[in-house]
Amino acid sequence: METPVLISFVVYMAIMVAIGFYFYFQTNSLSDYVLGGRGLGPGVTALSAGASDMSGWLLLGLPGMMYTDGLAGAWIALGLLAGAYMNWHYVAKPLRVYTHHLNDAITIPDYFSERFKDDSNMIRIITAIVILLFYTLYTSSGLVGGAKLFEATFNLDYATALWVGSIIIVSYTFLGGYNAVSWTDFVQGILMMLALVVTPIVVLFELGGVEQALSIIGKADPTHLDIVSGGSVITIISLLAWGLGYFGQPHILVRFMSIRHQDEIKRAKIIGMSWMFLSIIGSLSVGFFGFAYVIGNGIDLQDSEKIFISLSQLVFNPWIAGFLLAAILAAIMSTIDSQLLVSSSVLTRDIYHALLRKNASNKELVWVGRMTVIIIAVIAWYLSTDQNSSVLKLVSYAWAGFGAAFGPLIILSLYSRNISKYGAMAGMLTGSIVVIVWKQLEGGIFDIYELLPGFVFAWLAIALHSKLYPQTSKEICAEFDQVKSKLENKKSL
Image (cartoon, rainbow, N blue to C red; front, side, top):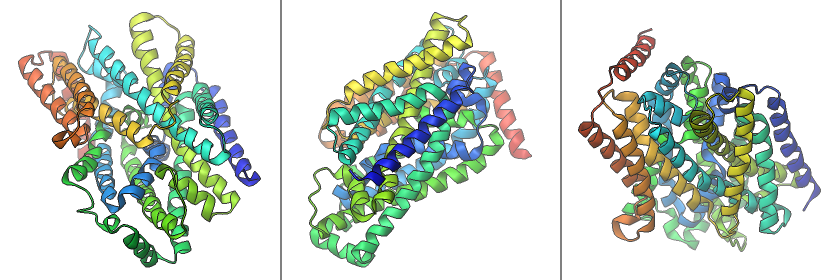
């Protein structure tokens, strides 16, 4: 372990924890802790949304897939970019307006419960269970990624590496809440993008240019250069289907809810999509040209998901390598902190406050939120103790679960006044169950990514049950029309 790398890591981690301490003293209410008091500007909103979206899979899982699959894996980029753009364009502004209109709803269960006036709290409970189930898997994927990073960088054994990464991430989330998470994500997003842009450029320089890199890849494995026949039709459809997941990811949706004003969403969309385009292209290039570097230099890479780590250590001096490796930690931390916070907010706001302690003070709720961060982290840590876990596989499962359970309902709740609470519950349950069952089946049509069938069946379940048990509340229809009028008036101006 070289001293410059160690210093870079320590400095970076100290900055993240310092941000957590700063916002510890700025957090006075549950709204501050879980939504930042709806006070974030477009830049922080955009980059924190992107950084929390991409997670460790952007620097570990995605380059690893490109390393093993070649250009056929690039279809996922098209799906993700299209999905993210549509999410910003069609969901962000209506969701910001609607949640603020509905008694300042600050969580996704809060929004669904208020949107459908569910006095039974069944929608709130179902939403909370789905979030806790899939976020536990999602968080464990990040802890696995962090453990792989510390294992490879500091020569720690996997168990020790897992402990180190978990303690760092939990500490500033525990302290500072949403503002700490968003501002650290802002810093981490910039670091991630720079690392992904610089690394493939330097690798290509070391290889002698694009033509030489393609020649090495073609000789080693010609299928790596075939974007169409290099993957099956089912594989291509599955990769494109990743884009559907954006509509249901709570850690992204809460960014839309927290922006300072809905008129700033357009600027945030431009910033966020620009960041995402550069980061994804860079990530794909790391895996694709990293394959050429490994083959060309006769390197024995045991784990394809460590290609970025290996390149950072091989082609850069120790000082730069330290900050590039810190970028991986940034990617991991930026998603785990958001997932921990959303899970904590669900347990605090939608279970503890709404069902158990309606008269709890703001101070009590903030501390309950902090305690639940630790509880969820401990469960995720336990699931991460298997060092053979794949970051991409864990992420894909959780991504599918949220996309199918919440995606169709988010869209329909914003654009249709005829969706009933029974349709909402049927959609969430159907989407979750289809994803879980489909994941266990293999062969033929069941090789399609479980998000796609889950999304389709959830949409159909919402439509069918809303027909069978229609929306009859005049209050709900009036609120929908009021929000629609607000959005249309803004457009006319």
